[in-house]
Length: 86
Image (tube, rainbow, N blue to C red; front, side, top):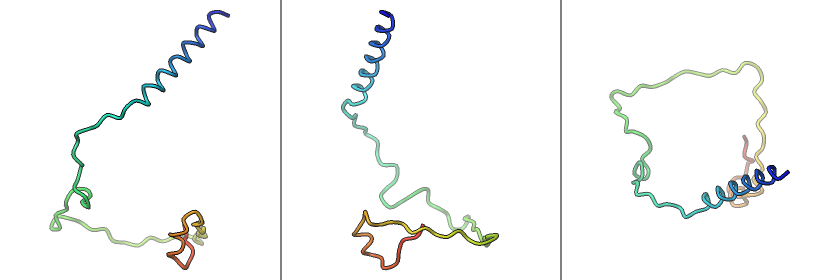
């Protein structure tokens, strides 16, 4: 009985210590942004770039698209006269 109380108290102490350490002050990093604003990924040399062409075909009837409920975003919902589809 005594041993189970000690194990329980050690477990609770460990959980509390972990919670307190994770809620500490956020450390500042001196890292520069990975890329300038607006530029994503590596630049592409157009003379060596490839392309992909083709078509995709669906066997059978396509699935019915579901209407997205935009009631939680009235400003966005007001921008469109037709329902949003998923």
